[in-house]
Image 1 (cartoon, rainbow, N blue to C red):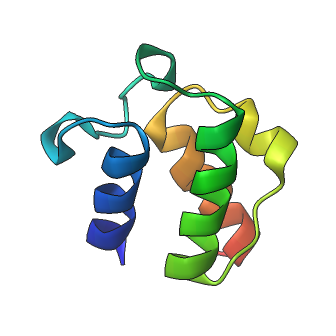
Image 2: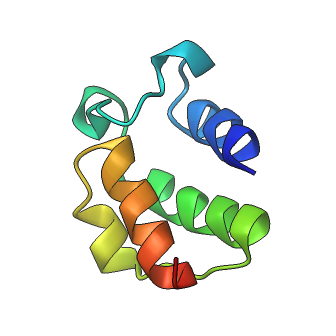
Image 3: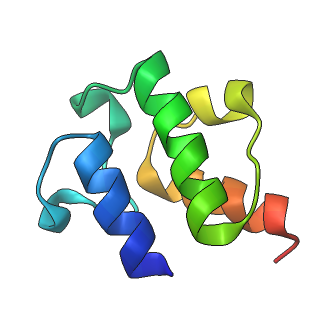
Length: 75
């Protein structure tokens, strides 16, 4: 599942998979409202978890998104 998430996030951020690490700053990419909505859909598809859009928009790194997913999925 993690690989599927990373691949999808790389596509959303229009970058290479190698550039997606936990400490990757989202602000270095087009982290806008469209990217947030697309990431919400990706997480729902991959993890069957619906994230809060406002909380997701506040994420600054890929690791922040992963923490949000863990909290939302109860892990």
